[in-house]
Structures are given as C-alpha cells and as structure tokens.
Image (cartoon, rainbow, N blue to C red; front, side, top):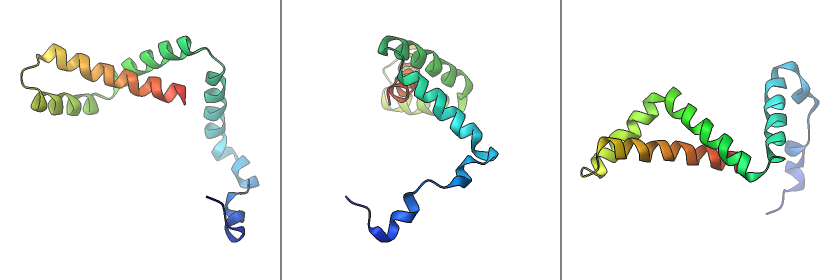
Length: 99
C-alpha cells in the first residue's frame, strides 16, 4: 500500500514533536530501543517481572480475567485459575518486550 502524494505531508516529521510536552514519549522510545539491544533471555526475564508487577497493580483486570475463566472452567480450582491469569499477564509483557 503506497501513500498518495496528496497525503505525504501527514507523514513528515514535524518540529513541534520536539517540544517538552513530548519528551517523556521520546524518553520511553529511547528506553524501549535500548531493550531491543538485550538478549532474548534477558527480555523474557524482564517481561516476566513486568507481567507480575502488572498483575499486582492492575487488580481490576486480574479479577475480571479470573471471573471469566471461572465461568468458562468451573472444574478448575482457584489456584489453577490464578496461575493461568498470571501466566497471561507474563506472556503479554514478554510479547511487548519482543516487539
């Protein structure tokens, strides 16, 4: 898919993106770039830790996933469901680290 000449101006870098309000975004992109230089084994460990942190901090989403899985798998114990949800959070963050 190509960009039409008439829309090309929408995709050019604009100097306004260098304003201080955008600095946190640039810093995050820089840190994310540095992560790409790390070996996969390190990225996996970092992703696992971030997933555990996200599961603890985002209890609302954790509980929503727990309820959904309990409804889908009534034969599973509460510990099994918690393990599945935690592994889901880990795999989400591992995937984000690999991008």
